[in-house]
Image (tube, rainbow, N blue to C red; front, top):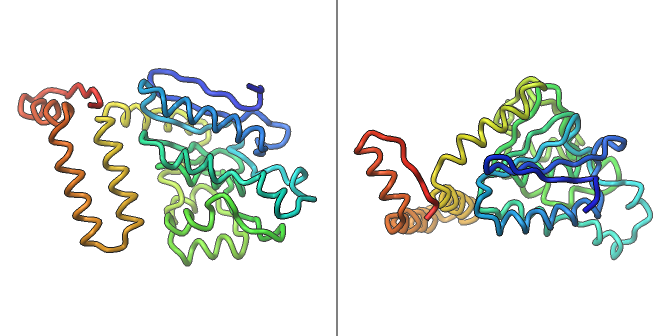
Amino acid sequence: MSEQIFMKIIDQIATISINRSEVLNALSKEIIDEMDEMIESIKNNKDIRVLVFYSKDNFAAGADIKAMAKCNSKQAKEFVFTQTYNKIYDLSIPTIAAIDGYAFGGGLELALTCDFRISSKNSKMGLTELNLGIMPGAGGTVRLARIIGESKAKEMIFLSKIVDGEEAEKIGLVNAAVEKEELYSTALRWGEKLKRKSSISLAYAKKSIENGICDTDIHSSTNMESEIWASLFDTYDQKEGMNAFIEKRKPKFLGK
């Protein structure tokens, strides 16, 4: 592993951070390859209950443009981050992007893979690839439209519009915009709340929400929801959660 990206795990919450301050934490193929390995390790570690992406001062100022400038279409495919980003999106545990400073291009696309986005009020976010004669290529055109709607997504992408944290909160791009010094602690507080939930219930709720987004037939998606809901009644956590409610105590979920 290089020193450009690292992961720490404290009290069941994993944090992945990029350490390239000299280039505003811009993403490279090497960093994404290492990130991919980290995501695989998280998938196989049942003790990790929440994943946070947080990098000091800048979330990620996009991809390494100098490395891509002379690529042809075949070479450009080596810089596609989609496979790794889809792995993050598919994680069964909750994921949080804590966005400070710049989150442009592939950096914002990384944040879009997460279940929640929390930003500092003065952070700057945008998918500005059209200024470079290209377009977002790591899920940006797909995920942004799902999150903030088609019209607003086109506004941001077509006009290469940059929004700060406060505007991002207004349009639903981030869940909350906070002061810079409160950013990481806020993400960890959310993580603490999430890790106390039943991990199996969280995973199933996440699956049902995604199915409802992808399946536009309301009858099909709600029928699937009811099937997923009923299946939870065969789990320990359902029995523990309901018994704890009846007994007026806090539940102790085991994720099974």
